[in-house]
Image (cartoon, rainbow, N blue to C red; front, side, top):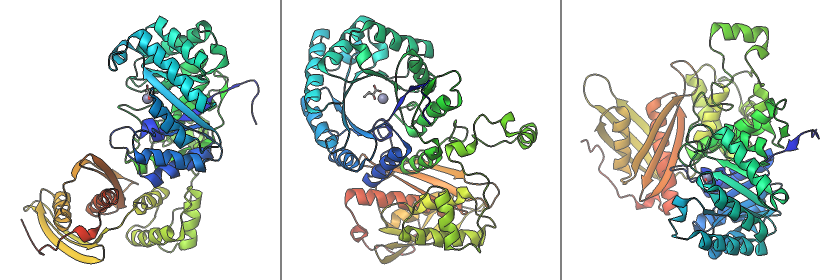
Length: 520
Ligand code: KIV
Ligand code: ZN
């Protein structure tokens, strides 16, 4: 029930715009739609779905998210240029509740880029916000790098934007430069000083360069901001943005000293965090607040003893509150399809029959090798089978490695129905196996990231492997999980190659026959 003694803070999620902008975090069209649906279901007030003028793909994603949204306002970003704003409106206008977000850099460093004088920029702001407001009733305006903009000029441009019809004024800390007290003061003084400020919503948008994004956003709320801009897992440019899960849980847990609330269904946090991590290829650090693997784990004897006697000794929130299922029984090799489907449902995954079939096959293979299949193992299997196209598939892999000499790999692959094989040597088994894949499918993709994590404990734990590839400026990620790290690595590599192929409109038919057993 809504607490009327508290003020509501709107949650503006920009995972699909600022988050997706972070190098390597590009998502496919379908993934964007899926994340938008999850954000909508969890109660996000405003979803910034993309930057429609940036590309045809961004335009399509924002339009489709706008058409499908049920509850959230759908927002698109536009620079302070009329064609940008028109394009943004074309994309968001399909939403039941659309918003145009237009911005311009107002600090001295940012004014120098378009080489505009203070007066010229003020005129541009007036013209572009007026134009946006003529198209849409709901207009957000941001002075980019506000925290390094001269105070008098900031007041002047905020006033112009309000007079031109902006309904939300966002104050970005674009380079993560501010600190909590300053963040609170800035918003408070703007609201006290600028004529008309009491008629608009003030928003805070903090980057995390000094690790203060969450503290700065909460301080801005204390200063009078009523909209927090944030991303799932804190994804975003450089060190990222304010993490949605952190501000939402901080307001929930410390409502005693911060009299504010949000309408977020916090039990959906964990699931969306995992999905964003999978589709962006950005793993969540183990000790990340709220959503890290260790956030609710208690290792030391004293902590474990305290937890057994009274959970509140070391837990300030319950795992269930953020959607971590309580202790649940692991699955085993006798578990059937119905048990797997029920487990997936418990974990928040609603998979179609075909995907369930694939996951079940992988699950049975895993259960044959591993006594108990834990929740994290199941989640890793879902992520691994959700990887788009399947032009290239791994059929067989044999590696030799050890102290005696170079590692070798023999691989058999299915390339759009054609069986192909190759052998290679390498500097370790993963290198040998990747080289063998490149012989089957020659490509110039550059490996940007190769990362291995153990999903559960023990030497039979599954390894999840993330691979990020770049080819001609296009980036694709792949993930896979297996108790065999080399197999997981090759599957992740192939998943990333498949995604690159899909994006480039290529198929396996472009692959020429190669000679078998071509050892280097
Ligand atoms: O960080 C920033 O200033 C932004 C703006 C576009 C709002 O992301
Ligand atoms: Zn930003």
